Length: 566
Ligand SMILES: Cc1cc2nc3c(=O)[nH]c(=O)nc-3n(C[C@H](O)[C@H](O)[C@H](O)COP(=O)(O)OP(=O)(O)OC[C@H]3O[C@@H](n4cnc5c(N)ncnc54)[C@H](O)[C@@H]3O)c2cc1C
Image (tube, rainbow, N blue to C red; front, side, top):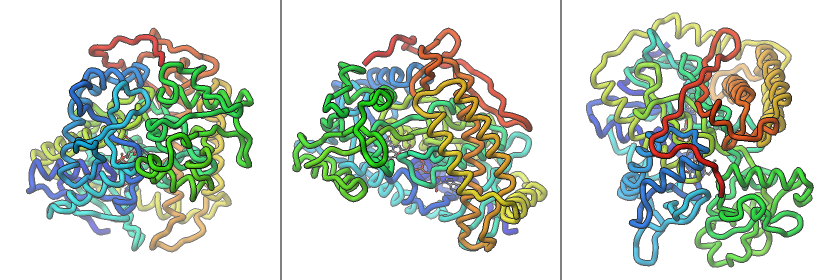
């Protein structure tokens, strides 16, 4: 087996991974840095980010206000020291990406424009029309590829990270073109592998967001934090789930039920359509459950009405949304309302890190959506994710570079690498069982969509956990039909399914244990927030048996928990 050696390995080439690469090389251009990505970098989900990146850019706004909005949005589960650091460093990132070529939309007098977003008390979303992530990614990719000491391994699929004596020493990856597994030796690894939304059926996320990095870190002994908190976005296009940006409501869009009522007046009278996502998704789901959804061929839905904005504004501010609605929804938002319903949209949980993005494993860092620092607590505000990827991607790059500059390589045990080869090629590709991965995958997604969805209940969660564990057993008897090596999509699907089943288990178990309602986690049987018992983070560790849960306190600096109304 071939072995590659690099000072720093970054897994993932989305916003967090690319930002980390740029930051690391700016610490030292003597470092040899590699970015490994199962997709071409510009196919990472970050390219899909639409509405904007949150930052304080005006004198009337303030860091305290952005921090407070974030903490309140998080239903007080965010670590406030991390939030304060985040809001202070976000504006710098807007300016840097501007210098690297991101064409931010402008006000008539030439300033970077900002639009309102849910839960923010000030228009704080810097945007590049409704293709913010696309432009940020192109700017960052251009910057990252300009350094001769950053090497890209595009279309390489990482299968495991190698940890010895609680230190990250390398990883294994399949070169998709040849289907060969190769080993990588390193001094530092940055996980930047994105979220795990694809454990759900109805989601705004790309097919490739399967939580691989979270699972790999979990297997290597790092804890996953707050996995029960999955965000549901209020406006997933029916029937595909493709996102209609919150920017559509930021620009003035209305939500209507079957009676033509702006029902948000009954749920968040002040903020209406610009309440945080958890509040609106629950309101929509409640309207649907109470029989006030509109009837369509794909089940009940809610109407997003942009008609009153007019064609000119829609074309200028929301051109992608118009295009998506016409092509994928069959409706022109200038003349018709858009059929939407809540869709799984963000993993608040992830690999636990401290503010330096360090995990409890030496030399292992995590940033972006796969990480949990925790800035978003129980519910993320729109625009704060791309901002977090930039701010903490930079921190991860800097910290990993400092660590790599002062440490040496460790040998990778041949045995570990051979065992991984055996797992992937003998036990998974070589398996001749009678189960098929798409069948198990669809079953998992159906369970998550029905029993671990917006409203949850103890007995349903227990049921879901039991069924997911049965699927894990069936997974062991699975057969990949195509036995060839080059570009074996069936094998990669199977590997991703293995990761997702474990993440679905942790998500469900963490949700079952948390007997309260907070942010995006809403228990019908425990409808109230319970600060006395549950103002704490969940940690999940892998064991030989079921996952083990532990709890750690939330860091409160300035804002003690208070009632959350909008
Ligand atoms: C439609 C949509 C719109 C959004 N709009 C906004 C917005 O307006 N504002 C906002 O703040 N947030 C938005 N978000 C959320 C935000 O875009 C994401 O949370 C963020 O971009 C995640 O970036 P990331 O770098 O962590 O991961 P990703 O961009 O998801 O990148 C993950 C990377 O990891 C790589 N990878 C994964 N597994 C492996 C493996 N096994 N081996 C090798 N490589 C691997 C992938 O190839 C990829 O390069 C939106 C999300 C969606 C889906």
